[in-house]
Amino acid sequence: MKHTTSYGDQGFSEYIRMAFQRNLGYDEEDYGKPIIGICNTFSEINRCHAHLNPIINSIKNGVIMAGGIPLEFPTISVGEMFTSPTTMLYRNLVAMDTEEMIKAQPIDGVVLVGGCDKMAPGQLMGAFSADKPAILFTGGPMANGEYKGEKLGACSDCRKYWQEYKAGTISKEELMEINAQLAPTNGHCMVMGSASTIAVCSEAMGMMLPGSATPPATVNERLRMAKETGKAIVKLVEDNTKPSDIVTRRSFENAITTLMAVGGSTNTVIHLIAMAKRLGIKLTLKDFEAISRKTPIIGNLRPAGKYQMEEFYHAGGVSGLLSELKNLLHLEEKTVSSKTLKENIGDTTVIEEYSDVIRTMDNPIYKNGGIKLLQGNLVPSGAIIKPKAILNETLMKHTGKAVIFESIQDMEDRVNSETLEVDENSVLILRNAGPVGAPGMPEAGGIPIPQKLLEKGIRDMVRISDCRMSGTASGSVVLHASPEAAVGGPLALVKNGDEIHLNVAEGVLEVLISDEELKDRKNEWKKPIFKEERGYSKLYRSHVLQASEGCDFDFLIP
Ligand code: FES
Image (cartoon, rainbow, N blue to C red):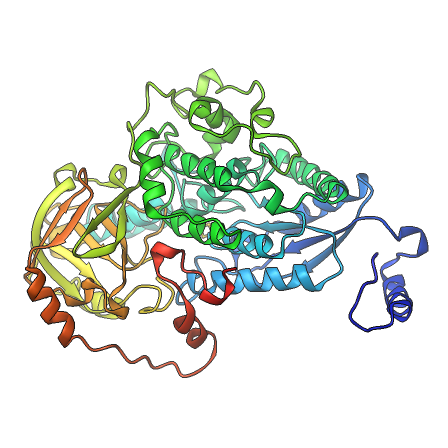
């Protein structure tokens, strides 16, 4: 173990640390071996991380087999289901904790162990800034749930069946029987939501070993991949290969191509922009739009498609997918396996029996445009929509009158009210729910269809907000409107009854009022006053960047 400290007396530093490390069972003969920190985010409250400890043991075994010394340490852990008001509020705190612990401790390299939505992005942001050798390893997706012969997925089906219950098409008993199967095993959500998307993009980016993103949490391959990850991090340390030696702009382009090809979560757009900034790489929404235009969705995965991570794993996983995408990738990029992406893919192909799970380039489930950038006077810095998630295709081009909710609370209070003036052509708008407004940009963008319209059989409407939506959700939902209402973006200026025009194919989102009217309304707008006077939420509101810029803190960007 190295003994560099800031005590001033190097000899004394070595002497005092030697005394303390003997208690861990290490002595003189261990000096000089690579010290591998294993960042453990186990938590019983973050249930997606409740099974991490056996995985950590396998990583340790790999480190020891390769001649290193594994030392496990904790960082904060936030899970999507049990964190209020939203895990996104804490992604930057995860990043800060991870970065500072990697920098502060006498470790030569680190394996980041996470999985739930905001954890891996935060961990990678921190590791990129710390820039010691690092590999990400996730806890893996849950195995499929099943109800009466039909596959269930968390949490696309949580939403789907809740909506059906509210519409009166299934009973309370059925709803509860389904509930028991929605999250049937350890692991993170098993549809192509944020957790799965970040994992597959990280593998394509080169920050996970090939084959490690998709094995379900329940299969022994996950433990074997954990062991291999332990071996690989020791080699990275021996070669002094840091994230900045591996991840380039082209690596991010590979990740974005993968995001589009699996019809992945819109949250990933924010995370990739933030991660790139930590390495001094500028990604814009236009970069996503450009890659989206030329990338077909070939991963037939929910919520955009039909299958879940278990089938994706059996079909060939990320390497299988990338083998089809070869012509769109930068294959010479380095990865944490110490090989190039091309070498990682090798001769992997999609398993024939699963050819409907990973389609060919000429037989995609959607020809291109997995995530569409929208621009116009309502969203000068952009907003995004997932065209394939639109349930009612006629809404791809739509003009309707705005029905405004001033906050998430206002939406909850009024959306199901009998007196709400709304019909299926209305455009539902939720504002003051962005990075600063909420704060933390909760996943409230999938505004519920008002009960009275649900009962009429309506399952989709145009919805617009400055917040996010779960990657497992679907609908004609415009997200991440930037700048957000709380900082004076045009979303703050819309009035009930204004006509809103959406044209997904042309990437347009407008409020149909004149520039002069918009300017007058802006002059009358008053900045909101927030209640928080202290603590993390005050720090957050003071420094968070807009969604189009990745929602990192301004002072964390190099
Ligand atoms: Fe953790 Fe879905 S709740 S990934």
